[in-house]
Length: 278
Ligand SMILES: [Zn+2]
Image (cartoon, rainbow, N blue to C red):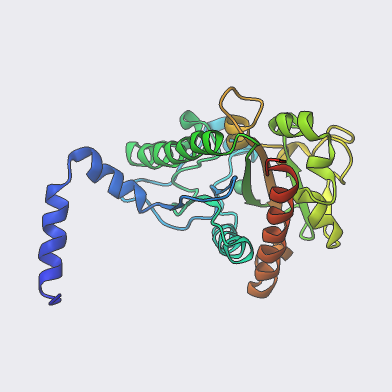
């Protein structure tokens, strides 16, 4: 089509949208979303870098600002780690995983916090609601399509130990169904996500021992997303927070390797624990 027509067509399309869908179009530019074909959803709430128009940087509750509990820094390159992993899973299995990754910077909205702590401006509220609306829709869909079980992997970055991946399941609570059905090996065995990565020589914290022994590191033990959608909730799926050290995500080559290994782990776990047995 002649390029001179494109701006006019876009203008018409925008005018034709209802206020609700116009708002949805605006908030969708802050999300990377993929509907999948596998019983796996990858989320990444802290890897975004975009400002939200009209939204000032969050200040946080006064007490938390001084205690250091209030964090607005990006989990660097976790957006890229999540989206690359999704691509590698598709190449490896021929099927897409589900994906919801925030493109907005954590300075403006924190999707891994409940709304009252996550936003300080109405425009950021819309982005928070869009993120969780999308995750909820996908989790509901996964539960219907995959009665054998589904897994949510929430991708983060931590600066406490560069060569470590911390596990966050609230000490087994957010993967309750999987562990009830298959035993602790679904979380820690060689075909589990963390067990598979451990076989590659990666340091997992806590080590791959049964949930609670020893307990997960408190700061990385599972935040709002895995607590909201984990299998301990009425309408949840098994959910694991993965906190990657810098060595796994900062360098492009290392990040590519991490994505490939995580994709292999997703394949192994899906085949072993999320596929109905004849
Ligand atoms: Zn994070």
